[in-house]
Image 1: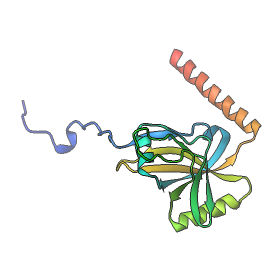
Image 2: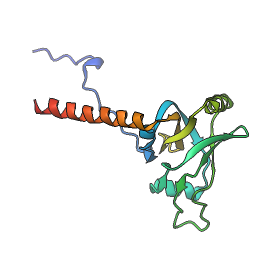
Image 3: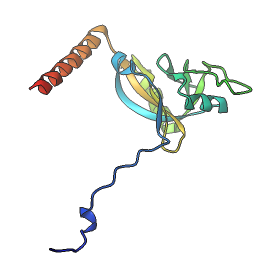
Image 4: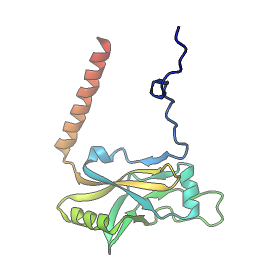
Length: 168
């Protein structure tokens, strides 16, 4: 029997390490149902210390918020971050928060939102692999009721198809 070691490419692959810093804080699940997302963009977000600590406890909501380009700056409006209980000086829960994007991206977002019916919708608020809070926003167009019914019908059909495949 041959006892030579295996080449490096034939060894069993190690499990990919899950990143302990990456963590989804809040997700806007209604956005994909209510809007047709054309493109998305990752932005930084300016937060106070108590807001970051509150986010680490998963106490936020971006479902009712939106983003807007005003005076060459990108703002997140009406997002909710609960006050941090152990902070001496808290923060305003629904204050406007500045989003960080390059000038080129801001110009593109401004041009996109000037088209009829286009808006900026927050999709996911998360901590990236470095532990920095990021917000993914989508350039979206609102769906009409018949589009929503069509989306729901497709989703139901896919569920039924999966169920049938599972049974057979």
